Picture 1 (tube, rainbow, N blue to C red):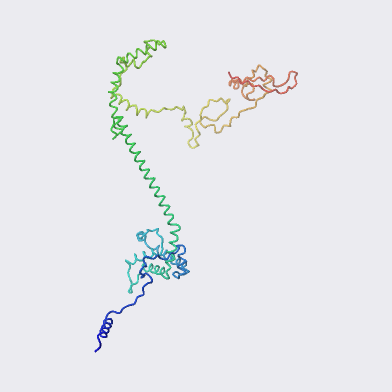
Picture 2: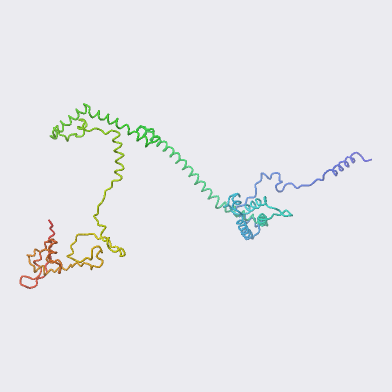
Length: 412
């Protein structure tokens, strides 16, 4: 028999062999370190994140080309999706198409897609599953995510901060304006109530209430007649007449002194009744609207009505009361279309005016038109008072130099 210590050792070894085998673990590395939660992670600058991933061989060097090829296939597949499906995704239709959106589309399609015998996806879900696997091949999606992170930090986040500050300022301004407008509205409501109270209306229906106030006018007019016929006003009228007579020598019994007031006090002028005034006002409105001044142009529109309708209608002639010396203006009603135009002779023979002498009176009719009728020229009767005596030959028969003409503009 074995001694007691040896039997105890054997018994312990047998018990250890019958139990589960023990596994040795290495403690002190990775996330299993006792103080791993208290230590800081690796500090990497966000702009050098892609470079760090490439140096650590976590990302291939040609990841740009791989991402571009994947995005081309993803854009083609995205166009085939219905608009109702893309609107239900996170971010809506305008969200960027990246790896995370591809995973969301794959999972949404896979939930309702049929599977093959070996559990593979079919239809559009299989296409998007290939796109996701292409992203995950050699961790290409890490480069796209790092590039998106850099763009968000450099551009998107500063822009959103500025927009947020701008919107905050707009909210403050809008709240200030709201308070101001509320205060102004309360002030306007108070002024409106005060004005309605002054007019004696409630302000619920302003037009009807103001028209209803017209019924109080006859009562006010009767009170006014009583005041105008009182003795105090009569004493004031007598005093005014005495003062006018003293200051301006106006007779005391002059009918022009306060004529309207005297007629009212004598009872000659009676106020109109309510019915008659209302009827007159209602009747005057349509009369004022319908009565319009008529202008008589005195144009004979029947002139030329008997002319041939097939010919072009000539415009109606206007008689300007001009004597053109018996010139033939064509047939009446034809507008003188075939008649030759009337010529006006502007040639004035100054030597002929000089030979006519002072007996001609220096009048304009001595030289009006070389071939014009003298009677027609005399009928014009315009005396310009031009002395043409010095124009022409000299005193000794020789030709004198032309002297400057003096025009007397005295038209009085």
